Image 1: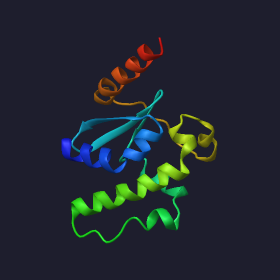
Image 2 (image 1 turned 180 degrees about the vertical axis):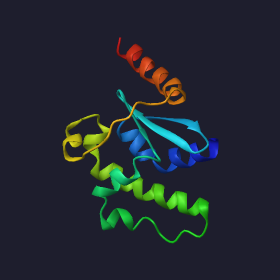
Image 3 (image 1 turned 60 degrees about the vertical axis):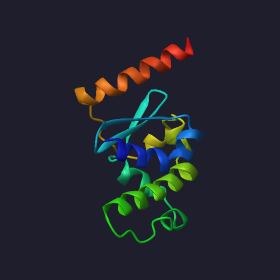
Image 4 (image 1 turned 120 degrees about the vertical axis):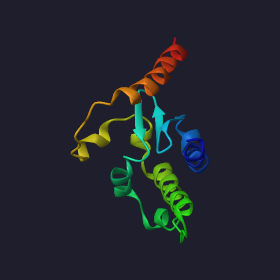
Length: 127
């Protein structure tokens, strides 16, 4: 579990810092970027976020030779694309939703059990 979370944290550190995000892991295959009252599954946002990626972002991919390299390559592309092209999403602005036809699904209980405490701690910090 920690290895995947560490990959995500290390490679997306610039995005995490810029947008004051937290990163939490549900299991060894799923992490969430958590902002002010939103959580994005790193795995599930792939198709959405790549819409704005440029040739420059994609050039970070390189030529991965194994699964670990593939994961790191994908995360490097995300790091560039998210950092430079998804300010509206990562700052909590919901205006980007108008462009996309998305089905909103409720989170399952294991996901809520991990994410809700993060939201509650954010509220306490504001008080």
